[in-house]
Length: 229
Image (cartoon, rainbow, N blue to C red):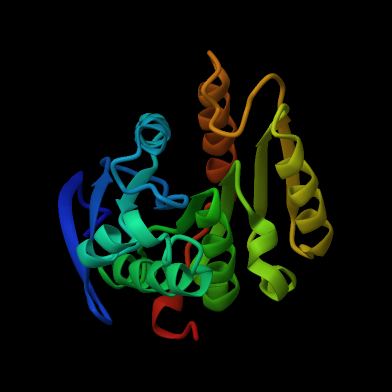
């Protein structure tokens, strides 16, 4: 369906305990689709992720912004914070979402990448390890890739880690994760940026870096949606 023209629709995906929702936008002639995994306490309405998604679409990538928690879980998490650091749960939801998008295509379906922020970066890396060739590449913005644990060594997709230059603790954690990754990998530190990339021009830099990375590493998944474990 993605090769014939532009797509702009909302989706609901069934998961244990309810449904999760997402917004899919794919420009005509897209080179791939980027599935977003938001950070702790955020949602598909994150202004930062929506900004990056818009820039990626301008460069010819489709985007899928989704909530990794059900409405009931989100409501509970606002008070208990019990789900936002449940990395295994977030990764399972992301796997389901990526498989859903892949199954909407055919044998010539567009390649799929992930863009994770904060704890969503760990979920994106675990999902990449689980899905193998179905995930073409992963980009992390201000992420916690260290929370992916042993899954880091199993990631085969190229990985770009983007960290703010003033986010000192997270720089250390990203460097440790970089050492555990055995795939093609790169760490880029954006000068002057803090954790949320709120400083003028820093989020634009993230979008540029991510756009270039996805353009370089998107590859067809060759029907892997039917075979990935």
